[in-house]
Image 1 (cartoon, rainbow, N blue to C red):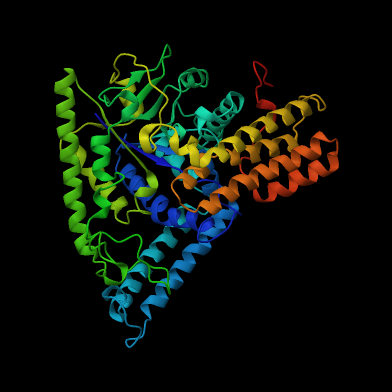
Image 2: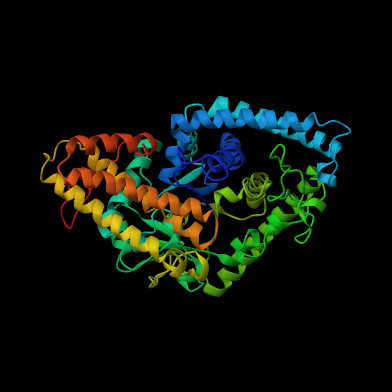
Length: 515
């Protein structure tokens, strides 16, 4: 069995900057990935196809796809995309000189192509997305086209998280999925595929039956799922030999010369006019993008991937003496946002894989159909660089590790002290906002961005801003200034209103939890 797993995630971006990092990141990903990928899945589901892939949607991304503010912002962004396409299409014949990709004739062709794409995106959005993304995702799940994976609320790096907040974030994340999509997932994408011994106990207590780790966590033997510890929870391993065929730290299909270049912009309009051409060609010398050349490469790469999967399944089955499973897993945002042609490649693969005689299923299918071997110990690990925790706990982010520990301790202390003052059956907006800000501070994205030298200033600012909010509200609350604590909680909630159902009364401390 072949299992394709997509992990959809962005941190909370609403009200926290627009460009170059902030809401623009969300809207670009929405237009380039979430719309076309869900359109592909919807089209296949309407044909009656089932068990296409396993789709992870983190609670914090799902919340943004449903938020009225971001839904309105996305509609505006799509309109702006159309205006930018008009600007390129109306380039004067004797306009600016430059590379072949930005010559007037090439820009007019680019503008016409982008106009068609933006018009189609607007029509799709107005028909399917104006009330958010939950309905679309729920429909795909209800039809059996996909299995949904859940996860902790704000995508925290669980091994470094206080156990009380770890349990709260996971259980509330699963509850959010139940409320949003109509079902509580039994599978999860653990943030960053991070694992530490004992997590399986929390998973089993939370109703999780299976999760994903990276291949090296299973010492490269990903041919079967593996029960973890003494639990009934099964870990499936990402097959790197297959996954890296598509995208790896050094290579993969998206770098092919005929695909649209992600990094080259026409700065007057923000549109992307060039193809990769070569890895060594400077932006000003890249060739114009040609959709026909890209389509030919897509077909070739879809067939290559299917052949790779078939060979790997045959090889692994022969090695273990029984039918094997191959799991390929990727960030969903690769398909469209980073790799313009990615959604079309997905559709080709999902259509051609069964035609090639390969059984396609979800992780739940693999577990239920017995693609499970014997238990194996899993070490501290992740899918990050080095396959350990260095990205989120290395020397360059020790200040964030310390900040996270302090904020977690502060939040738990403040919530516990307020419990002593407020009847347990009363909802407390102050405690709720302290926890909300703490969990936003604890998102794994900030350390990742710092370690990878990607928008470092924005990442550090976001972590410290949420830490400041939690500290400010907690200080007022612990000093007895209830009026100020409530005013601060309300003020911060204007920007950070994610997860309105978050209920601090459900935070367990030790064996205590308000039920």
